[in-house]
Amino acid sequence: MGSVAERYQRFARVEAKGRSPVYEAFAMQVAQSPDIIRFLERLPLDRQQPNLLFAAIRLVAGIPPSTQELNAALREHADAIAEVMLTRTTQTNEPSRCATLLPALVQIEGPLALIEVGASAGLCLLPDAYGYDWGRQRLIPPDWAGATAPTFSCEASAGTPLPSRHPQVVWRAGIDLNPLDVSNDEDVAWLEHLVWPEHEGRLAGLRAAISVAQQILPRVEAGDLNHDLPELIAQAPSDAKVVIFHTAVLSYVSNQKDRDDFARMLVDAGVIWLSNEAPHVFPQFAQKAGPTKDDMFLLTANGQPIAWSGPHGQSLRWISQFSPGVMRRICV
Image 1 (cartoon, one colour):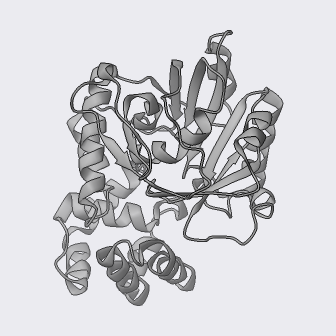
Image 2 (tube, helix red, strand yellow):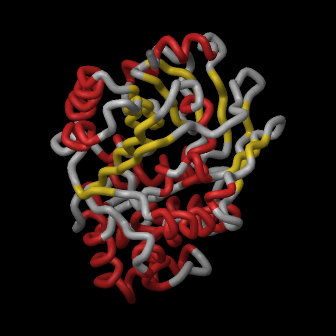
């Protein structure tokens, strides 16, 4: 019981605190509730995640109005909630994370072939379709993306090399164990319920990005990152620079050896690799970045730390010792 309780306490303290009072309170309630912990312990370890539990409850029963009602919702709808948690996964497709990836992408000489690992519905495969507002610099959506294309806000540090143009993307594809379809109403509903309750701006941005994706229909293949990625890389155009990227994906690969094998595979593949993950995912890279920021992701290029980023794309802190010139040398 302790390990489940500790997991939810950490979620409340590190991930939800200051970002979602509702989920912070719910996570602390779970940590203190033997009934909910027993419910979670009956599920596989990889289905005990806070985001998965809370999204499933909301999908089945709505948002409980209090922590006491959280227990009641689980008692009343336990089977339906468990079924959602066993058939769905945490596939938060946060398109605003593109605002933290773009400063790295535009420093890579195109044309680019983008491949996203853990692509969900493929919304982050469209960084060239969105607008961006970094405070001191804006980039409007391109005309071809349509009038409904979103503009994502991201607070960028003074040293961040901000783009004045979109990257030249000539080919794009994603891979996911269970791809979601932006044309499927149930998949879209699940994506919406994965957005935290108070985050109305994120929800609006998600819906706008979905409207763009419904026109473009980005390609997302079903497959495993360790076994099926090389075949997808081989399909990229030979005259394009292949960029593999992922955000908040490798934390769901629990074995560190599997993560490290994945990293070695990408280094050996000779591609450009952008990883945007919690710092514990690749500790060998995080130790190069200075003091760890547990509430942020670490953005690396080919294993070299370049920036700290907000988990939902809300902020970007460029690591001062890595200038744009260093980034270009990494990506040669």
